[in-house]
Length: 222
Ligand SMILES: *Cc1c(COP(=O)(O)O)cnc(C)c1O
Image (cartoon, rainbow, N blue to C red; front, side, top):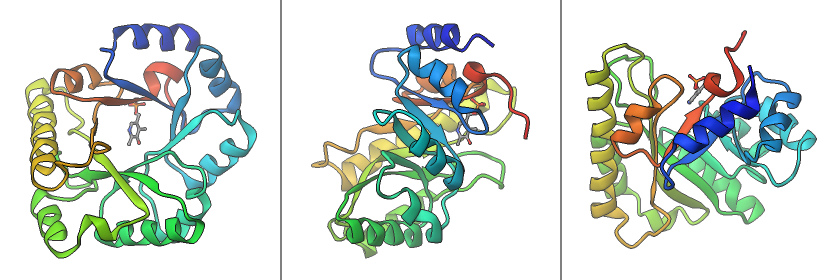
């Protein structure tokens, strides 16, 4: 894998308004540094322990995104430095993140994860759950959270039409939430969708942030 070239090629292919998150999970610091040297500053990890270790060891101007399933009892380890949490999928987790933010007086950027795929294994809110939550809970009560947008994962399939339809649904969710609850929130602007296999489709459907791992760093061995 030529990480430098991969970063360069992908960046050149992205529209200007689309942010690249380089998903470095399971990859060594040397790979991350190579991407860093190629100009990449935003990296995504899905394990709290790995993220904390890499944060300690790597340059401090890296923006670290958490893209995995976050457990409430582990929020405290990343709360002081994480720049965006992509996968917030329950009210319980939002409340817990808010509590950790309050403890350290830091507003934490989050994306609401939506269930858009047909597969039942993918985490996330349904639109009904979110509507209900915002009817019960005022966004203003979550003082230590900045809700910056939405995130979703499409079905893992070769069916391009299905993937496009799922991304389109997420875009609609974003637009509706923006209208109904975030009209005056400029920070609500991110649609995080698209990975190595489907980011081009995601961009066609309005993605503003893609999370690309294997197309940059090569396949992962777990
Ligand atoms: C691993 C992962 C990615 C990147 O996947 P690739 O197919 O390697 O690009 C993106 N988003 C999430 C949530 C992930 O867990």
